[in-house]
Length: 187
Image 1: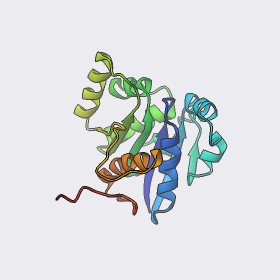
Image 2: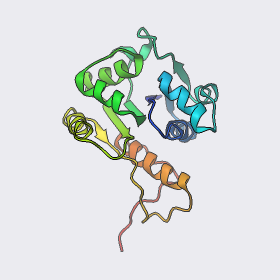
Image 3: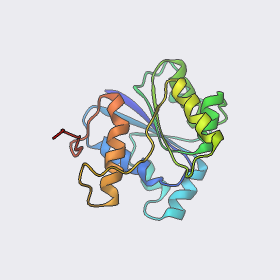
Image 4: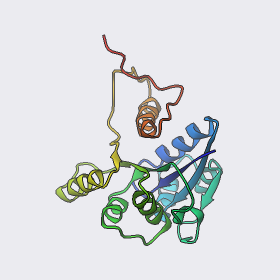
C-alpha cells in the first residue's frame, strides 16, 4: 500500500483538494492521509459544495490540524510524499522557512527532510515578488510547483476538466496517472 498525504490549505479552490481525494479513491493501492487547515474548512463553507466532514470522509485517514503527534508528523511513518491542493501563500511561506506550527506544515517539512516528494498547487493571483521568491525557494528545496494554469490542448469541456488535468499533472511526480488524463500526443 502506497501512502500519500493530501494537504488542503485555506486558499481559494479547496474543491481541488476534495477532487484529488476522489481521484485517489478510484486508484487501487493508494492510502490517503488528509490534513486540512481551519481556513480550508471555512473555505469549503464559503465556496459551497461540500462540507469539511464530507471531505474528511473521502480520505482513508483524516488527521486534525493541531495533532502534531499524528503518524504523518514523523519521518519514520513512510509515505510517498505530499500534495498541497490548494497551497495558500501562508502555507508556502511556512514551508520555505521551516515553520511548523500545525500538522500540514509539519507533514510537508517531514517530507522535505526525508527526501520525499512535495507537490504544491499555489493559489494566488497576481503573484507578488514575495510569492515569487517563495515559489522559487520551494522549487530549490525540491518541491514540484504545479500552478493551476488552464490548458486547452486536452479539449476541456468544463471547469472540472481543467481541475482534473491540473490534478493529474500534480500526481505525475508520484508515477500516478489517472485514467481520464489526456496528455499531449504531438501532431
